[in-house]
Image (cartoon, rainbow, N blue to C red; front, top):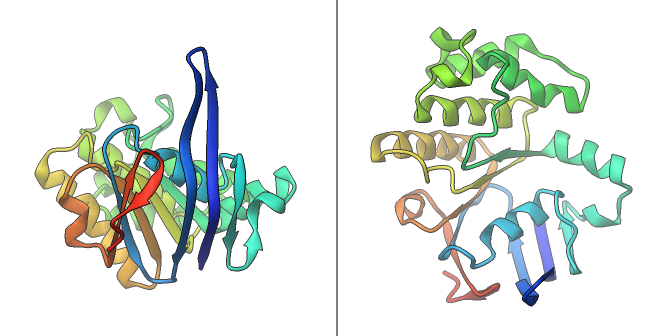
Length: 219
């Protein structure tokens, strides 16, 4: 499904050049649940954003089902991302003035398909059927993350990327979020989770360790 070849990303700061990623090559197959582990600053988020077609690499390539996503024009890449990739952020990124169901439907705007029935179905599956009209400020942290998962699933993606999805959750809610991602993988989807904690390893088919922008001790 995914082929990453010699990926590198360099940022320029006042302190000088910072290599966030340095020559990462990786193959991920359909149906895997991959945990990318490493401490803060190891390059996990940078790697996920590149896979998500959100951050152009300084060098190297990302191929998704043999398509070079950074060889596409910007609008084509955005449409490809909306149709194929769902992203779950640590900080939820819900729109504060929209209701829960409206936040889920935001994902449909990228492809011009506002599927309210699909949104309701997902929210029911995630135990949020009683929260459809609530605003994010009225939700618990666990409910916000489940709403974010529903949004990521709306367009029936092939791949879900999750950046520290349990970082702001208690153990019970963290387990619930990971089980929902595991169910997506068990149904044939592919999941990549970036984390610095051990919880995702219980569900992972493979663990990739990042340190200082390079892969160490893959398993």
